[in-house]
Image (cartoon, rainbow, N blue to C red; front, side, top):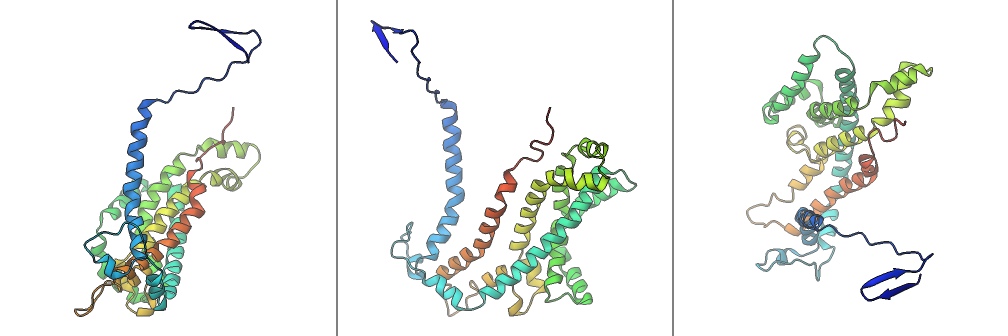
Amino acid sequence: MTLTETGPNVKVVPGAVLPRARPRRRPGRLVPSLVGLLVAALWFFPVYWMWNSALLPNRRLQSFTPNFLPTGGSLDNFRAVLGKGSFLPALWMSLSVTLLAVTVCLLFAFLAALAISRYRFRGRTSFVVAVLLVQMLPAEGLFIAQYKLMQGIGGLESIWGVSLLYAALVVPFTVWMLRGFVAGVPVDLEEAGMVDGLSRTGAFFRITFPLLAPGLVASGVYAFLQCWNEFTIALVILQREENKTLPLWLRSFVQASATREIDWGQVMAASSLVAVPVIIFFLLVQGRMTSGLVSGAVKG
């Protein structure tokens, strides 16, 4: 491109290609971006502090000078935690209980959400109100009844007994989450599939069900976190040392006797190990969570 300048004016030679103008940065977006970065840093700092403390010895953690960088750190705390030999049984117990509870929860919550979103039946309003009322009940008020129930059916110290209680704990809110996703998918999509020759069941599984996958994943993430971090129900139902879940296993590191101080380095290392499966789970499902609910379902 050739440009000729005459004083302050700029003349363009015919046939020349002008460069694209750079988009101006809007100053109004700078402040929200900085605020978002600050909030993200504040949210991430406790996680970083946990990992940082897990690499430091207990004497440095108890000093009055904070250690923001793990200089001179080591993996001794992780070796000490894993050397006790109780982490893998607790990990297996938590994974078994959580996955079974999430599966049962999604199955019943999905069917309930379909029923209250797509069908009009007698007692529908009462059922919706009952779901709300169950959410208002304090969990502590149900411990005695839950213990007696599990004792009567042989569910104490068992994976299926704790999973049943976990599923009952998260089903009400999961029903409300899935109800919104189901109501967001137009019924016209199924009717259009039935016009093209599909049965009602075929139209549901081939058209509607794939569109509900993000909702199922989002609800599954909520149920997974609630079951993975649940402490009080496991404390009541699981009394044996070999049946402890990870939250109960983590509790053993802070139950120091009167003559022994708490090793906070091992506590932070154990907390980091508990968080690893959750991070892996999020990495596996984050693609589904960010995908659109009905993206590309209707065109034209």
